Image (cartoon, rainbow, N blue to C red; front, side, top):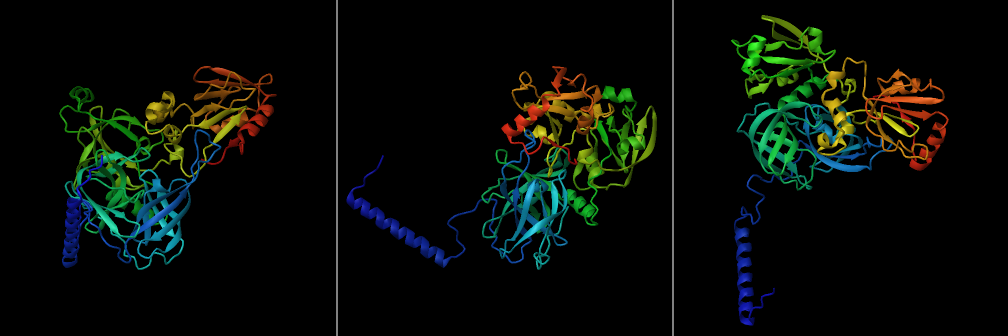
Length: 515
């Protein structure tokens, strides 16, 4: 609906508006500090400064389709804001760099650019260090020092960098300091901020600062809850110290799974009713540091490195208060360090020294992630076999734990239960490529293979030798799920291979490269 003003009123309105605008302009000329538009209650703009310790990073990424392991995804471009640290080097989150094809650095002060290479990368802690290809690219930039001095209630600034190079800090208050899940399922120390964050510049990751020192890197932002999860400085500190000698070993682990002892009946059962704290050893991982040290399922851990544990497995950190023992082991020590556990077992207390180590992702029965490499697969007569990984399951989307096949998700969550049956990997039939020769098998998927031609399949590499001995001209395949057994005519395999190559344009029928 349009409102028509009488001619005289309209002229009067226009005259008043013009005078009002003139007054505003004169006021701002006389008082330059005035701002007509405000950035927001928690933001303040900082102009471009020469030699700022922030670097814009641009990558081209092309990952793999784990549900079609012979295919690569379409390439995409992403940007992040890294921070210059001692070296000088550039610190950024590793998830941002996953499956990259090219990395480019850009200074925000003078727009100079350089290619870059990865010096150290750790996907478990979501951290990476980059080196520019041009050796003088970072000269005159004062590295940002690290601070681990952050307390609950402190205010931190998340640095966003606008296209012109100016910094817009969004302020947030630390509401909790605790261990949370990082992108690839490991738990590490996290600062949680209560703040809104305007992703106006669409950067993948951002530095988080306290008093002009680096307190962490942004890991997650929940716009609905208005919370920001920050990779805490102690995690970064441990990562950098381990990487400095060029022999990065990863974060240590003991190899135990614990359960709380808050239940008074459990405490009476295990004999610690009159003792303070302690946690129950629910599981000891095969070939782990704890197993080598002699720790057993059913032991009660009372103390680690002189720190007493409460019934939930927490210890008193001098800065952060109650923190899980996982932080003590993983961020206060390094691979190869010896750490003393005080154990209660069958009425007696004693100490054991655990020499900490690290398990590489490829050494797990079900690797938690596969990054920067193609998935392994083997196609037999249109049947696609793969090794199960967390990456395969996560391709079911954000709710993958509910959408992925239940029995495959169970293998990932409970892989320690299968550590002693001889298998090195979970090999499964992921799908069947439809051809005129595979009618009746087209709907089969997600079946875990047990044997081929009566030979156990413990890893993908066991398939080729098992195929050397068909029975009466047929390959016999046995699965854990129904149908328990299927047969493939060896004479039809060349015909099937020819058909699927033509129909699906497959570059290769297998990838048996390194894990």
